[in-house]
Image (cartoon, rainbow, N blue to C red; front, top):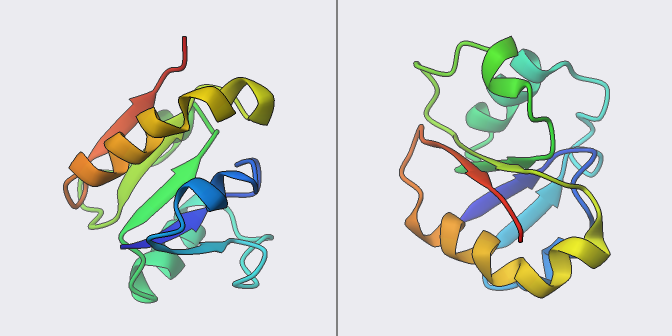
Amino acid sequence: MKILLDQGTPGPLRRALSSHEVKTAFECGWDRLENGALLAAAEADGFEVFVTTDQNLQYQQNLTQRRIAIVVLKTANWPRLRPHANLIVKALEAIAPGAFVEVSTP
């Protein structure tokens, strides 16, 4: 699966996703794009999932026509996320194209 990590998403999450192709918005040169343009660029480049910590994304963008699936993390705090990385991996494995999923950590 081709996964794009948004700017606020903790970089160490990449290790938990090692069986997938993972890039950051910065690596793609998209760190200055706004959400709509970023999602369009990601879709055009074949990304299947966008992982973000922007909890307002679903209210800021019309996601109904998007092919890219979106996973929203409730925190960007890696020490808090690390013990629950398996929840993120499970969400990614189960997500369908165009779906929107929020992952909460205990």
